[in-house]
Amino acid sequence: MKVIIDLRKYDGVVGGVERGALEIAINATKRGHDILLVCKASRESEVRELLADLGPGRLAIVPVHVRSHAISLANARLDCGFLQDLAEREGADLIHFFYNWAFPCRKKVPCLLTIHDVIPFTFREAMGWFQNHFLYRTAIRTACRLNDLVVTVSEFSRQDIAQKAGVPLSKIRVIPNGLRDPAKQNEQVWLGLADRFGLQKGYVLNVGGIHERKNIPRLIRAFSKLAEERSYEGRLVITGSVSGAPYQEKMKKQCDAAVAEAEIEDRVVFTGFISDRDLDILLRNADVFVYPSLYEGFGIPILEAMKVGTPVVTSNVTAMPEVAGDAGLLVDPINVRDMARQIGRMLNDIALCKNLVAKGHERSADYSWSKNCEQYLAIYEELAGERGGPRGCRHRV
Image 1 (cartoon, one colour):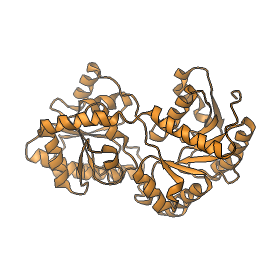
Image 2 (cartoon, one colour):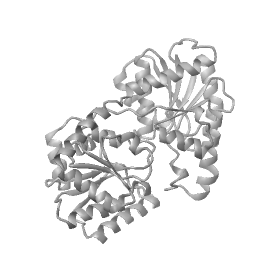
Image 3 (tube, one colour):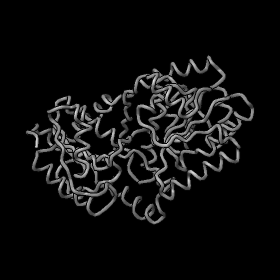
């Protein structure tokens, strides 16, 4: 098959959405399919660098002149004009739009849309009220209607999209995210991180950024209860950069206020941005990984912690129970006492910890980008078959 994959969201950082698009492109070409990978012209050299290890083959990069992946007339014109014409000209079997909104109103080939979650229906976070109600919500509903099929990452998200965007459940499929291979333990790097952040007495780790739904102030209050009881001498480490945008500054001030109120300034570390290598080493050496989010469409960090053998405490709401299964301790993210009790339980119950780590290893092994790609390729074949079958591959552009 020949497939157009939309990587317009890439803007210098490989997050979950970008990682998914890249991994499908890489794995599909290794299986003999032709991929046309669409990206911003301003990021073309970076995308080529990300794919440098792939070598010459069946993947071609198609740059487009657009400043942002955000909802706009410029992007809508690409969706229903340039990309449709490209598909027709190059004999593509379908277009895979990889981020929440795409408006192929004059389809020339089947169009597939991946939506990881619809968090802004529940938490506006940095989005303004007008933008949220009259742009985002309308765009999601329109995109779901215009595309032939919608794929999401969990059964929770499938149900949430159906309810909030008004999409028939029969039009939404579930394909879980994959996991990247973690960095191996590097004692020199680990000692440097331990010295930099003062982790010699151990630490509880949280990753994922400082957003309202990440529930960091309650986590800080829960950790302070462990400190009050003197049952744990380690630190609480919270990763994630603060961009300087008003919303981010507001969230950081709330976190700082929670730390000051609990009088544990010497026990809480905000690391700022952490590279994947350093993040993997922090995950690998943490006493407990705590992910008390109020809303997740999936929750990749839960599985990343399990993969490196770190016990997990996470929320009992949205997609997190689905991802963690019986391999983590589930807590009510609103109940600070419950959170503190379960973190303490994980720190002190060695038998429980070992049991959950073993289950976590087994559970994380079920998630791979190779399996993710196989499931997407099955949908590609289905969509191509509905229009008369794959037309074969042409030469690279």
